Figure 1 (cartoon, rainbow, N blue to C red):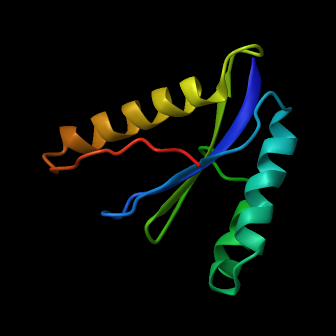
Figure 2 (cartoon, one colour):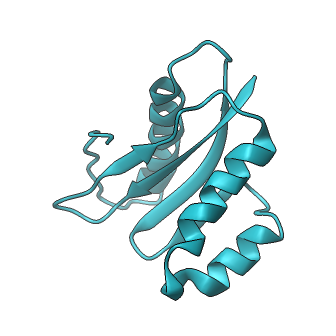
Length: 106
């Protein structure tokens, strides 16, 4: 299995997703998310926490979710990202929350 990362914006109406190139070691995927967090001054505290390892490979900050996930080495990373998001939103809906998902990765 290979590691991958993604960033998803969960605030409508212009929610977007960004998926990296995939098929990388876990440390490299972690570093890619770190670079996303390091770019914004308002995420400094979160960036520091991520630097010391995210416990569950996921970080929530404002309208964004940033996550690491595993996927088969030769699989399109969008398949793994879609599966991760489907599972995440299924768990959100299980709480009774009304949520709709738009899938338009950049």
